[in-house]
Length: 316
Image 1 (tube, rainbow, N blue to C red):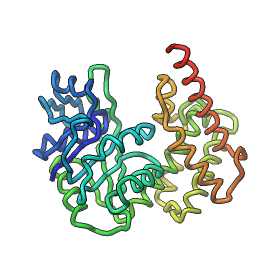
Image 2: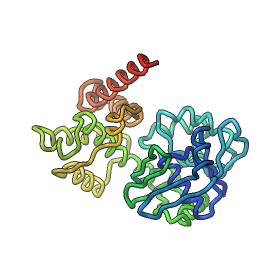
Image 3: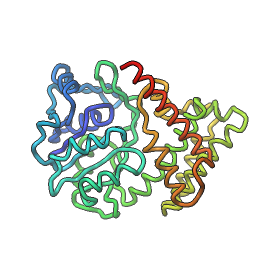
């Protein structure tokens, strides 16, 4: 199976590196700067699961992409999705499977429109990793879990072959017959976490220690749960128990990666994670715009984006 990994950053570089280490046929679609870095220093991973350096991994830049691939793995940020769709188009053939590892749901509509629903799987990953200043992928814990599946729940031959490839790379992988349900559950959790920690500029433990802090977190969670129920994907009991435990743990240092991006002055996925959840809530008739904690959190994120854009304009 010929595999194209979109990007060689923290997520794509990690999973692509593990696949390449296992002898899979892997190529990375990267920009010129990252291609040069990989040529000079190799693909480097520091991980509790074992450090790895792969010298001169196969890379291609968008303008030179000519051939089709069996599997295309997307691990980009949502704000880069339009560019990625354009760049990867020459790699998508009649039998190509596209496995996106983005959070939320909006990307599925965009990929379906560009390449056809039959090519697009559901998927998500659980891993804490970052790319340091030297281009090294730093795996921050020992979790590297990937869940994917056909969106209609079918146990297909291509899903079996994809799972086998990741198993060969010793990745904790699971093919799910309920992948969309699982993606909705993760989106509910992430939207609650991002909305709460970004709005309050604090980790969960500090929010819970504040007056009405627990009520803020619970209100955000209920707003998101209403959307998922309306869409026909009511979160299951085990998910709700686990999520409520995580979001109400006194002293917890947990924050959303979106808060870390804000603190670093980086771009954020406000529209894809929080904005899309809010829009679906409005479309479902659950509220009018501006009436909930979720809308306040989204406005807060958009104000950050406006200030960031203004600062960038002044610096130009």
